[in-house]
Amino acid sequence: MNHYHLRNAEIIDGSDYAPFRGDFLVASDTIKAVLPPLSPVGKGYTVIDCTSKVLCPGFIDMHGHSDLEVLRNPPIRSKIGQGMNCGIGVFPSVPGSAFLNELCGDVLGAYPQAGWRFYVSYKQHWESGTNMAFLQAHSTLRRAGMTGNVNRPATDDEISRMCSLLGESL
Image (cartoon, rainbow, N blue to C red; front, side):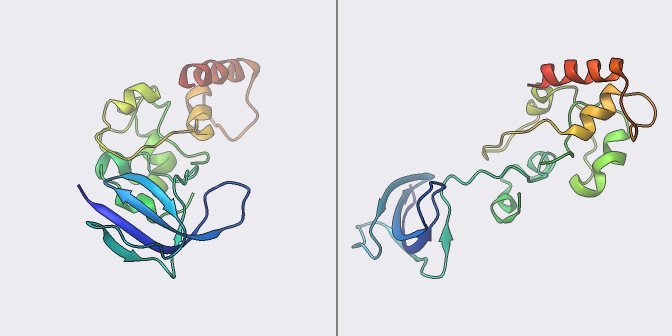
């Protein structure tokens, strides 16, 4: 098991409190303790100087466009270094249709098996240890619920279909 003592980091914990200096003790992938800055180093810990670093434990990335990258690259280490999913996503879509790559290939990249009716069918391809949660992308929902040109006001029937698809997705 890997043990780390992250020393003297600026910590932003997501609370309403201002950032503060402190140390973290980490064992494997679990934060074991948050300590005052420059606390004594425990035996068996690898020390990492974080004086010029910011730590945001438990940071939730709500906008990442990693829907397909997590399938291509399960460890998804790049996730830690990327920005914040908006209207682009991978479900609902029709398996085998080209629209997903047409709609968002420039952002998400290509994925040969792209096309999942629901999140559950997408999740069956998941092999990553990275925890991710998803919002329902409005562009795929709109495309799946409307016919023809989606760059127009939706009809009442199309809105009803989109609401039904959204209900299934959620």
